[in-house]
Amino acid sequence: MVNLSVRVSATPAPISPSDRNTDRRDAGSDGANALAAGSVFQGRYQIVRCINAGGMGAVYEAVHLETRRRRALKVMLPSIVANAEMRARFQLEATIAADIESEHIVETFDAGVDSESGSPFLVMELLRGEDLGTFLDRRGALPAPEVVAILAQVAVALDKTHLAGVVHRDLKPENLFVTHRDDGTQRIKILDFGIAKYVAQNAQSAKQTASVGTPLFMSPEQIRGDGTIGPAADNYALAHIAYALLTGNAYWSTEAEEVDGVYPLLVKVMEGVAHSAVVRAAERGVSLPLSFDPWFERVTSLSPDDRPATASLVVESLAECFGLPAPRLSMPTGPTSPRNGVPAVHDAQTVESSPLGVSPAASPGPE
Image 1: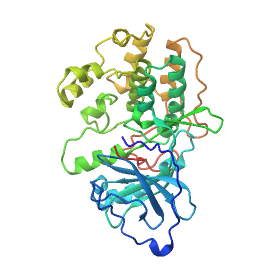
Image 2: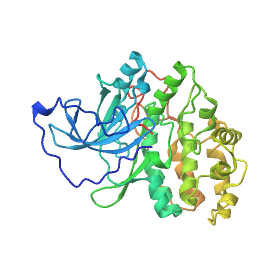
Image 3: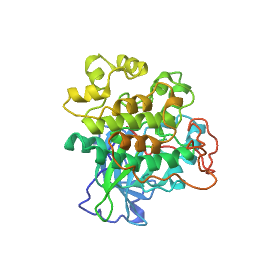
Image 4: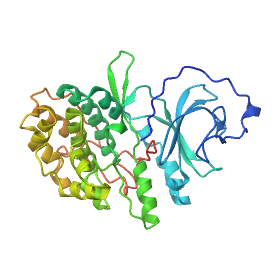
């Protein structure tokens, strides 16, 4: 996961139009397609510095030359959109978050495929803060009221995206970003909607086997490679994120420590939760109420149909486990409202149009 957090201390010097064709490649970089500080991408984004890089690309701090606004520029490997059809779909779908109004989704301002390198790119808001994985490492296990408050914000955004036919597919602490509003209150932003879809499609077209998601938080149906991955996969991940926040460790971290390699771990995940989450937490010195076990077992059920229908229901029932007031959550209203609490959601892999009249999402980024 690439962290979009950066603290800006200096403003780069303005670049004249005549400078915009300068070579963008950094000869001293390890990556052949790395962007050099001071160079210009797409004729309008001046590179300040590389924030971070991962196996799917890199994220840069950049300045939009016309507005002088700081942005996060995510440039991915060309293989993410391996053919012309996928490139066209990427350009159409990359900005779906703009069609879903939520303060908990990272804004996307621009997207496309670089003609020179063939690399897909996204331009997003530049966040200041830290991802929830880093936050958890720094803080350790969090109190239940704080966990419910954090996940309630995530649930609000997921309810909206699920209703629009968009499934994240790779929820994990590193894809949840902790930032703050002007009044100092905490705000959670969801990163990286849908890029996993393109990795899966590319692997399938190349007749390769690829598990999309993060094993510690990935649903069994994703590991099996089911053709339809729905909102239940995100709801499953929410339960594992809740456990990690409450205890300081992922539920499957025990198995990850015991097995050699990722494939034995995937087998364990596909077999389902076999050990009490309450007992496992107690072994790590964390006390959870007995009611947590039936909640955890239901939300992580091997059958997606047996899990709660919405992210809001996941968080509301979690609050109930701890005897906390139900968080203030609300589903979207209007013609796309769910009936009987079940949203009219389609898998982001197959939906051609959503209830909101928009295409399924592409994500903000590489890992």
